[in-house]
Length: 109
Image (cartoon, rainbow, N blue to C red; front, side):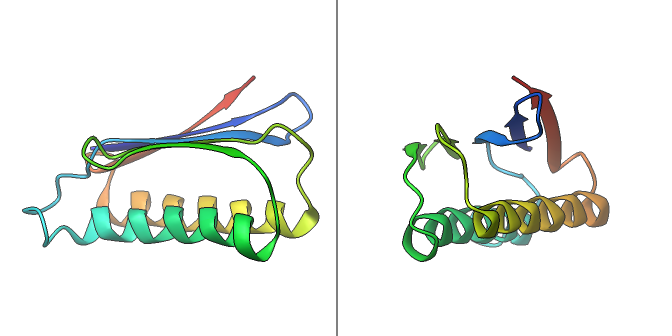
């Protein structure tokens, strides 16, 4: 199962995005759930950096299916929109395939 933890501060600002594990929906190379999650997350991270010009810390371990982004400063409005779109997509995958394969969790920091 893939676990996504989205951390926001008390004002609702994004502070961290963490992804853990592989979905386990199908065999490696045929797992459409894992591939969908990966595309959404990696595309959003790339867009935040290359299109929006955000600066943030990223830690990745592909073998374990781990990625974490730490947002230290205030994000631009378009970056917030990109993260909102990511959350929307992830929640739709969770609804479609179930919490057995993807769990999206929010925490306040």
